[in-house]
Length: 100
Image (cartoon, rainbow, N blue to C red; front, side, top):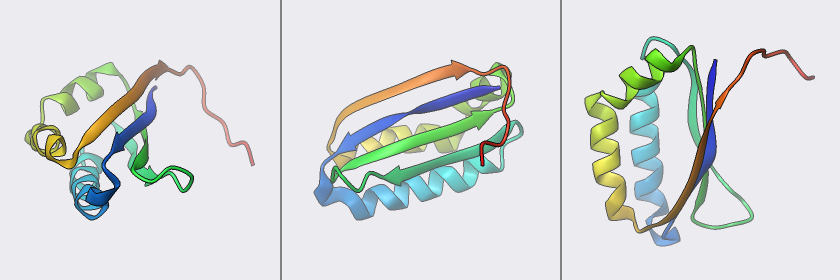
């Protein structure tokens, strides 16, 4: 399994547009084969910071995601939201089990 996790920082004044962009790309991405989790969540301690979390069956599924028109549209549009930084990492996970 591949896990993608990190943050996107953007101008807090663009929060409504960011939520729209995040919702649109998440809905399309969750319909992709090999994607089990995909979302963005506002960080309550830092206005304009959004947490990213994704789970993919394998690298092939993630590669296919990068080739989709909805991701291209998202990446093209997010640049208009005043992105000030990103810190996103990919992890290869060998096992997943319920914690609580």
